[in-house]
Amino acid sequence: CWTKSPHALADAAESLLEVRELESAARQELDAWISDRGDLGDPVEAALTWGDPTEVLLAEAAGATMVVVGTRGRGGFAQLVLGSVSRNVVSQATAPVVLVR
Image (cartoon, rainbow, N blue to C red; front, side):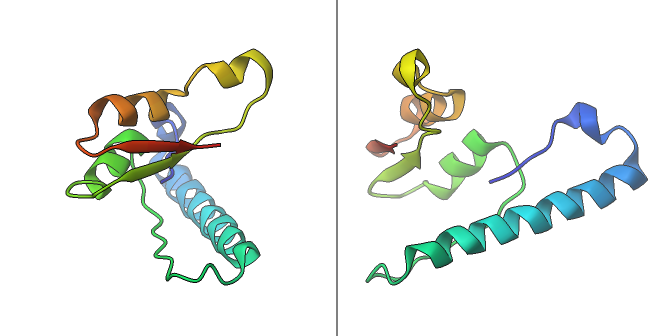
């Protein structure tokens, strides 16, 4: 899931171009990440979705048996504190949530 601050989308024409560029960059990053994993044994379904990360993850997780959410992997004190998306998914998901560093 990816998004851009609404404040950064003030100029519609320029913003549309930026959004398309961001979407293209996000797609390349996702494809590279999947490619780097090689054969995982089970099929991997990847989706690139525009929107608020918490809302998108919770909508995708509706009816799921388990929700797996990655963390940013920050070190030191920051790793002791969940990010806002992780915290929101943990507190709002109807299924068990696993956080993966």
